[in-house]
Structure formats: C-alpha cells, structure tokens
Length: 469
Image (cartoon, rainbow, N blue to C red):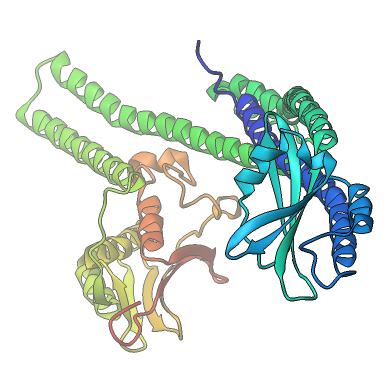
C-alpha cells in the first residue's frame, strides 16, 4: 500500500507524532508525580512512628530487655522490628505481632540486617505484595546502636496507580486519535486555498496569460503566494508577448529581402537580358544578400546575448581614444554625405569593459546618426568624465525622434517609420547598443535637442584607481 505523500497527510503525521511524544511524556510525568506523592503520604506516618518508638526506647537506660510497659506500647504501633548489634552480630529484640507474618521474612532478608547511618526509605515487593520500609538508626542511652525498622503495606497505593495506568492507557490513544482527526480536518481547511490556487493556476495556459489569480484579501502566506504567482504570470505574459513580437518581426524582416531577391530572379529569368542588365540584377541581389546576412548576424547576436553565451573580456579601455579613432575612421563616409563629424573630449576617460563591444556600441550610434542626418548637417561625439561615470554623447541635426517613439526606440525591430526598413535596416542596431551598455553596468537614453536632432547618451561606470570599476 502506497503511503500518501500529500502535504495534508504529512502535516497530520507530524502533528500526531509530536502530540504522541508530548502526551507520553506528560503521562509519565503525571504517573511519577502521583506515585511520589502517594509514597510521601505513607512516609510521613512511618517517620512519626519511628520518632515515637525512639522515644519509648529512651525511657530505659538500655533497651536490650524491654519492660512489659514498653512491649505493650510497641504492640499498638504497627508492623515493627527492632534489632541491634550484640558482639558484632545482629539480634532482634522485638518484633510486633503484625510483623511476624510469614510474608515479612523474605522482605527483611532482602533488606539485610546491617546498621544504617541515616534514615532510609525503600519499596520492596514480595509475593505480589508491595511494602514500604523505613530503616531508622538509633542510639540507646547506654550507647548501644540499633535500627528501628517499620513496614507498611502499599496495597492501596498499587490499586490507585493501577487505575491511573489504565486511565492513561485509554486517554492517550483516544486523545491522539481525536487530535489526528482534528488535525487532518484543520490542515484540510488551511490548505484548501492552496488547492484552489493550484487548480486555477493549471487552467492558465500560454493562450490565457492575461488571467490572474484572485487575491484572498489577507496579507498572509497565501496572499504572498498569490502575489508572487501573479507577478510570475505577468513576467511570463511579457516574455511570451516579446517572443511573439520578435518572431513576427523577424519573419517579416527576413521575408522582405527574400521576396525582393525572388522578384529580381524572376525578372532576370523572364526573358533574355543584356550583360549590363544581368550585372545590375546580380549587384542588387548582392545588396539584398548583405542585408539579409546583417539581419541574421544581428539576430544570432541577440539570441546569444539572451542566453548568456556571450562573454565580456573586460579590461581598462580609454573611451576618449576609442571615440577619436572611430570618428576619424568615419570621416570619409561623413564627407561623402557632406556632413560635419566632430569629436570633443575633456581628458582621459577610462572604463572597465570589452573594447570590441564598446567599439560596436559607438559604431552603431554613428551609423544611426549619419543615416538620419541630411546633407549639410552635423554629427558630434563628446566624451566627458564625471565623479562616478563616463558619459558618451552622440548628437545629430537630423529630424529627431518622434515623442511617442522615445520609450520604444531601443526595442528590437522597432522603426519610427516602417516604410524605411529597407533603407535603414531592420531596427536591431539600437537594441544591440542598449544590450552592450547594460552588459557594462551602464545605460543608454535618448532625447531630442532643443534646436532639432537627437542626442543619445551612454553612461558607463568610471574606472577607479587600482584597475577595478
């Protein structure tokens, strides 16, 4: 038979186990206390009797031979045995009539007949009969040493303890059984909201991630669990939405170059073409292939970045030197479009990063600025060092960014003007730039200049003394 592995069963089992241990310890404690108190109840009369016997013995100089008056008084006290040493051996010089019954002889032999240094209580059992024995040392007026031994039947105590044992043996299992049923019911009531949440969570699928679990209205463990699950579902919804948009945009961006290439091939194959016409078609196909290759490379780059498989080999990088070198490399392209490309640096600007990716970051920003700045315009790169960060700015005098696109411009495949996709690319460059900045512990923002154009700002942690960021 399989043991249930539900939380409800385990809680009930732990509760019953703990309760069983507590009740057993409580039962043993109660039994011990009652037994101790009952024995003390018998011990007090024995002690009083021992004091009375000693007082009687002290009426004479020596108690070796008792007077008739002493014997008569001792006969009225109860089970009593008196013995002392005579030439190194014990000698019983008095034994009360009640102590002469055969059942007491084995008890006396068990205790022994040696003198005791101090009063001693003992509990003995003989032939099923329990006895409480007090051995009380005494010294006669003549100096003779002896022992007063008193016996008392504990039959009434045994009967009381027997009833107590039966009562505990009945109450403890009954209490455990009732507690198990109550614990099972209470754990079911306590875990019912979790079962309800589990059923509702199972009903939420990828197609219904807009649903949320109802909050119980109480800020307890269940409430915190519901809040955590709702936040997780919200993140899943965002991730699924981003994945759907990414898949749709990627398929769209890949489909356009492929469609253009297909159309070009169809036109070339439709009828014989001259060598110049074929050359032009092949050049057009080459451009489309380059554009398609660029899209695929950017997609693979972002996919590897999402999975954390791109490793940054960080070292100290002079961002001011990098900006100057890259600006100089872009001068021919700027001159082709009659653009002014300048760079301003306020001094050494060191950051801890991967020079290859920082080069890619600035290159993407320059590509974007040169593409959208009309002829006769200006693009400026500036690098300055702040107390905690290094700031890189790329300004242009182009049309700027529409206000409704400022917050989305770093999203993948986002285009402020979708009709310009073939001309300006698939919209992955700024997404890659944002990823590079975040991977270096920085951030990138965009704003429109007051006089027109856009300004992209990248802030990276400055390199501190000692070579660590």
